[in-house]
Image (cartoon, rainbow, N blue to C red; front, side, top):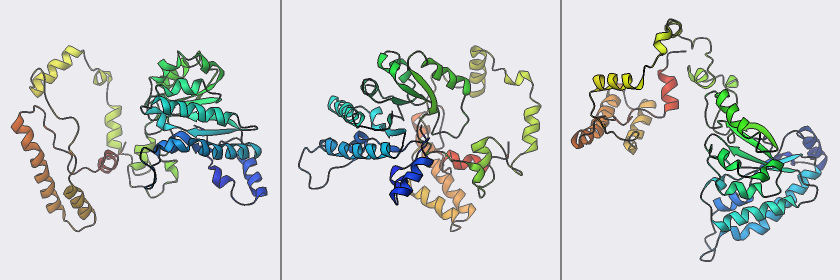
Length: 346
């Protein structure tokens, strides 16, 4: 999305200092939590009357936002981004009307910066036409988690007067973007929106800013996040095996051939059964793992306890006749911690 610049910090100190800071970040845009999401996430005070809705405070809250918009406009901010991720959840008609009213009011502020409203982590559904019909200048779409937005956007002629930020770069993933697929999604918007800009699908709060500055990472982490191995992290044996692969190694065969090979190898029935995912790890397992990391539990005892846990989850699966058994990942913490620890290079 727009480059984040926290308004409260930018305006700290003297007015002269504030003006100097605003001049330095004029190409950026302050990013604020939108007023509707703010209230939908808020909880009523203990003394609130029965049936009280936090959205009853929308009008006075929006007036505070309006004052901030006017001040940011006076200081030279060209854009302000409002994050409204609550819009991707199921919303009532009253909540959608609150959203529409809030941005009509904010767009009426004299001398305000241009407004971008971003929704992410899913498909905005009925929120998108509400924002398209509002006077905001730009809308940010998550086209990774909410690819359905493309189909909805095609039926909204109001987008022809707006900038659409195509969130085609996954903001919650450390892997490199599939540029061809991303370009295809962004290009779909060219005949729908007035202007299209490429962006991340959501704020980059979930990924490292720059692993090049992380000098104390354990071996394997930098290569995992960047795809580039540091000195000492490359395993030449792995590289040699990859370079020795020929064209035949990449041929998957037809679906019928693969099914026959799988049946011969795995000897499963026509409709194999298994669980969905792993099993929740019990509190004792997490306590044992912490004790092992701290050195209070030796390797042999830790392995014995993990094997007991694996047996505990395997037995019921055998008893009910599942075809593919899941051992529960008892000894694993998360994929992101297990993968670099067990990798030998790239």
